[in-house]
Amino acid sequence: MGLNLLQLLITFPVPILFAILLNEIKLPRFKKTVQTVTYFPYFISWAVFGGIILGMISSEGVVNQILLSLHIIDQPIAFNSNPAYFWGIVIISSLIKGLGWGAVIYIAAIAGIDQSLYDAAQVDGANRWHKNIYITIPCIAGTIVVMLLLSISGLLSSNFDQIYILQNPLNLSRSEVLDTYIYKIGISQRRYSFTTAIGLFKSFISMVLISSGHLISKKLLGRGLF
Amino acid sequence: MKITTKLRGWNLFDYLNMLIMLLILIVSLYPFVFVVAGAFNEGSDYMRGGVYFFPRKFSLDNFIMVFNDKRLGIGFLNTISRTLIGTVTGTLFTATVAYGMSRKDLPCRNLFYWLNIFTMFFGGGLVPYYLVLKSLNLINSFWVYIIPQLYSVFNMIIFVNFFKEIPEEIHEAGQIDGATEFQIFYRLYLPLSIPVITTVGMWIGVGHWNSFFDSMVFTSDANLQTLQLFLVKLIKEAAMAQGEAATKVPSQVLKTVSIATIRYAAIVISSVPVFIIYPLIQKHLAKGVIVGAVKG
Image (cartoon, rainbow over all chains, first blue to last red; front, side):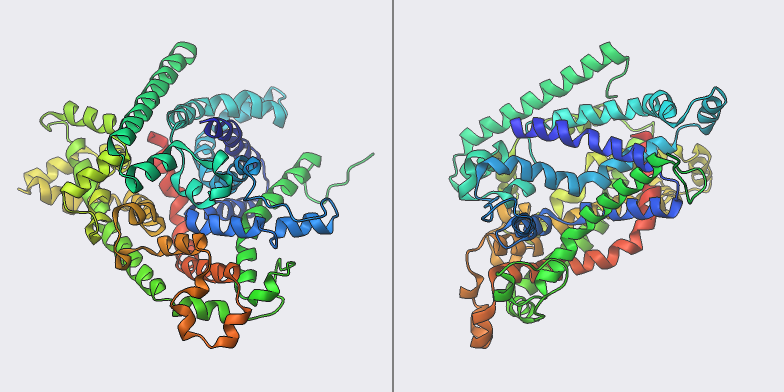
């Protein structure tokens, strides 16, 4: 769960920032190109993407070769066999794969903001920085909150496809998550009742998380999930 | 220091922003450049390192090795069939349910609604799911790919939101003309919902194409494995050269191949359909997400 929390902290704000920055781009065709290109990795499966990432961080892959040629390291780092790097690998690969997709919701929300708000601010002498802080962000705050609540409920489960692909016996101390554990001992070892109990426990905690998130946001912001 | 701008009204921030965007573009695109370069590169040469953008020593051996593996064909067959069948059936099925849910005169409507919402947040877990599938005789059958995916609450909600936007007059007009509910749905509502159908259909299709988990857990028959599962096994396998592909390839090729580049070739082959379809559908994407997101 620690991995999920860290992943949430890092990968949640990035699409928002990206959407806001993208909104500021002044060349419409470039904007569309960036959107199209960043959207693409979402459609690739984790089997494909994981395979590519594994190749890139292997000893003969790009990352190590560049570090070697810049003389930052003397020997290739075995990224994938070392548990310490696992979390970093997961987070970075999630970012690359999910950026375009995550940003789309926010881009759509920003596109829905009434243009006259910006014009009024312009008249009052606001510059771009002001416009972003005082208009853009508050207007999409509702969207942000909903997305945040939905992400919180997913804190205990993880993206099985991604973890399974990147996991191997050497990094298991950091890469075993609830879902892969349930899969291993539940299906392979057939300890049905034990893993069912884990699964129920997980669902229960998710329910608690999302209900508390919903209630807290109702109290603080006056709006919840529904 | 005066910052001269070539373009009207640009300042330092705009240039920085462009730079950031370019970096993001490169980071998003590069993994694919890398894998294509590696796939076309000769195996043992690749292992020496340094292949980043273009193959240093061009070779099609990796692709030959992959095409010789029977499992590739099986994978393609299973994945293509399930994507085609599953997308059509899943979209239609979910849309039909959504039409029912969007009618205010549906009996027990609230009950159905809460049942749906409940399953979105609370699930029994993997093992009970497996046991249910087993009791339905779906384990190790092709239909385990189709039947559980027929319905998704999330997609149903998207459809319902869209159907609610369709004016009630259309429904009444249909009733006046003596159409049954089914005909109204099929001939009036569905044709009006093309954008939503495309979007949802695309999501379902991508899900089918990319899935390996259900193939891995719910089937043990090698003839049922999907394309992605083939890739997963390839990546996790220690040495493919020991597989049946080795018997069909001349021995001098075997000496120069490496697992890594074979993997890359398999990845490239599996991604070709996605590369082809993506530009065709991506113009629908922006519209579709707005449809879903505005009411989400």
